[in-house]
Amino acid sequence: MTSNPNTDAATDAPETRDFVRELIRRELAEGRVDRVVTRFPPEPNGFLHIGHAKAICLNFGVAEEFGGLCNLRFDDTNPAKEEQAYIDAILEDVRWLGFDWGDRLFHASDYFDQLYAWAEHLIETGHAYVDDQSADEMRANRGTLTEPGTDSPYRGRSVAENLDLFRQMRDGAFPEGARVLRAKIDMASGNINLRDPVLYRIVDREHPRTGRTWSIYPSYDFAHGQSDAIEGITHSLCTLEFEAHRPLYDWLLDHLPVPSRPRQFEFARLNLAHTVLSKRVLTALVKEGVVDGWDDPRMPTLAGLRRRGVPPEAIRDFAKAVGVARADNLVEIAMFDHAVRDALNPSAPRRMAVLRPLKVVIENYPEGETEQLDAANNPQDPEAGSRRIAFGRELYIERDDFLEDPPKKFFRLAPGREVRLRYAYFITCREVVKDAAGEVVELRCTYDPATRGGDAPDGRKVKGTLHWVSATDSFRAEARLINPLFSSPEPDVSRFHEEINPGSLEVLDDVRCEMALKDLSVGEVVQFERLGYFTPDRDGDDDRPVFNRTVGLRDTFSRTLPSGKR
Ligand code: ATP
Ligand code: MG
Image (cartoon, rainbow, N blue to C red):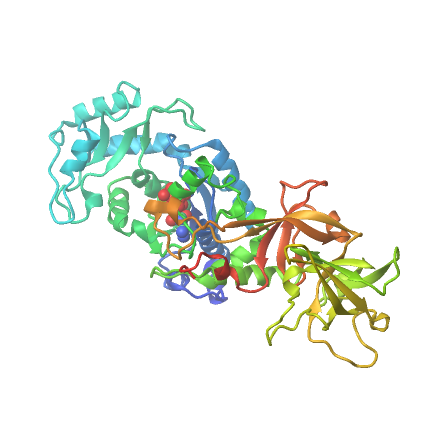
């Protein structure tokens, strides 16, 4: 007996267990299928988002784990909404996420000739007809969940008349909306999707790939299952809203001479708190300029997440942690942020920057002098080495790290108190300088030269360690703190404008950075010590660097929401 590589792979049991993988494992073991071929089928009418990432990780992941194949197929059946720019962006994003479709890049439009021939087949076998009703009439005659629909007056047309009209539709004889081709199934079906669904409609638009070749385009339902069959897809995995379409998916395959028999399985889509994943809404945000394009770092798109500094492995790990189930649920942002921190923590170099600077003058440090101190690039990874940072008489610390009148649990700087400056010295606050308005503008401190490197030889302890930068050997930058785009956990998409978090983008324009941050390029992510992970934004330049906050070090985002929404 020869071994079957797929069932062998199945016994190596991928560690992820969910109902899709269990099902496939069972089917392979029982010989009901002998291989696994999946597909990811984006419609090129927008950029991919984190929900699509879940579907990509599932389809490519399952194929890889079971020794199968995963196709990337553009569902490019509606030229009224689709653009080449979206196709390009989708290809880039799938690749960035870490998946390789090899030579299996397909388009539903590759099959337009075959789909057309199958439409004629349905007409010839009495299973499809041309309907002249207007869209409004069709809607009115479709019935409701509780009432059956009404047969179209054109339902009884002869095969010859249907063929003739359908060919004229193909040849561009009629304007958009004048006629459609419908499957002839059952206007009284309990499933509205079976009430003579539309198979072809007239669209008077140039298609990104087929140009003006076609005047008619197949519906999603007609294109999808048949494309699956042409490609030999074994498991057509889609989200739950297609569950009610499954009987139609099967009906079409049953009534057409297709080369293979795929099956559809549904899983719950990803819902993320404070996030909208509707392409319609995301498109509106972009078109109306509410955000700075599809890659605005606040967007849940892969392009936005990339610009924000989120690494692809964080998205893959997140998808794994979320899992695949049949029940809808809402995933907390904290879970996503956790995956991002976990991915960045081992490798992101540590740097120092001060977001809201407060000047510190070290009174007993010689004027005009500076020294270079050693700072570890990653205290958890000695291999990462160290760098030199400048220390001098004038420094900046974080405004939040000083309180004139501190509460009990505040262990940072206060009048008379001693703290450690990371990698440098212990300093003690001697005097608070205020402006006319009474605002603290400067702290006069002293340092203990014996504590160089951050430890006291006499064993004396301090409770607080602060980050800092030299006032003279540092540069100024802008930081963009990226917060949730929507205030409420489950935004009402029908009024999404009002749901936008007014604090979704906080811009800090007087950030002080240690010099090593000058060398950073777009795409690299560092940890600003004690603050979070940051990455240079392409909006910045040498004169005016800009950093996006990828994620904070702790879950603090609820503080950024308007009160009442926490
Ligand atoms: P629409 O069809 O409304 O334009 P869509 O988000 O479904 O939007 P598609 O390009 O059709 O966009 O999606 C491609 C694939 O990604 C589909 O199989 C779809 O089920 C899946 N998908 C879309 N959104 C999610 C989500 N939030 N979670 C998981 N999978 C998703
Ligand atoms: Mg869709």
